[in-house]
Length: 164
Image 1 (cartoon, rainbow, N blue to C red):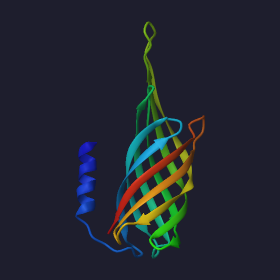
Image 2: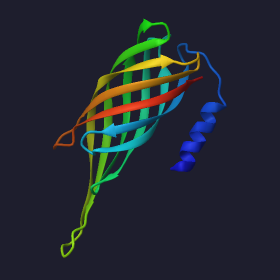
Image 3: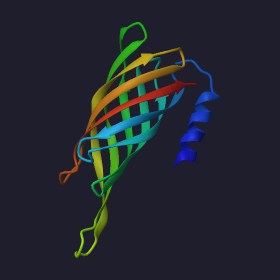
């Protein structure tokens, strides 16, 4: 996984860009999940459907193991960007995701209990983005993943993206 992150970072640093319809962005993010009660990291790719207004985002997040539970998710979201100040945007988001939860419980004198469960999710939330340069931005995002059987959770993320 470390090699993948290094490869993504190298690719991001080697690209240059402007933000117009058809442009793209790559990024990395740090996440925290309310139900996993753990932090994680992720990568994301963005595609601008219109000039600085509507974009799609695909992301992969991995949440570190905590109290026997780990989780990863894949998401496809749409953002509608609002300019609220120079270089500052806010956006609502909506999308779909797939979550996979793994658990392993070991107690002395008892059999090990382990397994995994995958579920579809609906993502609803919003975020804010600040452009450090014309190509580099930082963001904070809050989304609620609606998943059946008590797997729903609130996810807080902070990240960086490079437009090309």
